[in-house]
Length: 245
Image 1 (cartoon, rainbow, N blue to C red):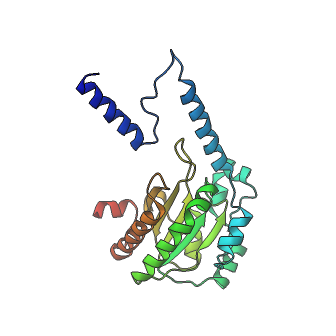
Image 2: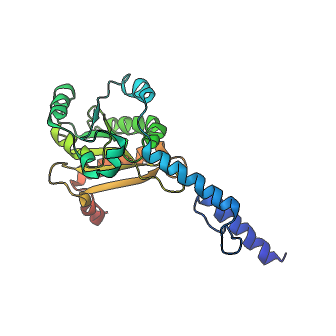
Image 3: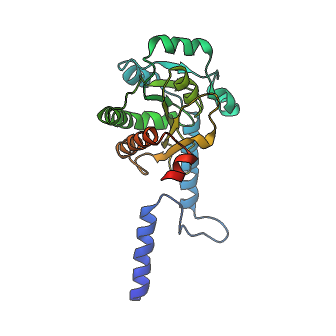
């Protein structure tokens, strides 16, 4: 092997190690190699499992209950319905909102909502490292934060409804994101200033790929605090914030 070929092989090996993407996998005739196909089927199964995963009773018992975090549900009745009817996961009912108003502190700078989204598995994997970093960071910055609310079968927009009901200036939705073929345990954070019925997607600032092979939860938490502080100071989020930065 020539020196240039050896260098190319080393660079290719380093590239393959740096990404979970399927690169330089080769083929056997017109078909993928057996090892590539098995790896694909494994990752596809992991993604399907993530989409159909639900917040476990053990998670509620060991995480939500000891911290006195309210656990509510969207208008969806089952995981199956959640996948087939996305709009139903964007809201909860008025009785639930009324209960939150009576049990949670209101009119804080920030309201955190934790949703299973499209990967409850991701929430259970990352939230114990992510949430304390955000809460502690906000308090250090002098930013008031309400009691986090956990939502079963929740979509991104449900944080707007909950935060609006509790009078928060900024909604932060920590949600399991749609799994790909590289990770079923990725989370995203959606930050929305002045959340409410008129909020649209372009009003939201997002931090995605929060997981051990992407942005680690602790690092993501620190960045989310920085974003929250910036949004509250500049009084804009989403596309409007991007134009200022």
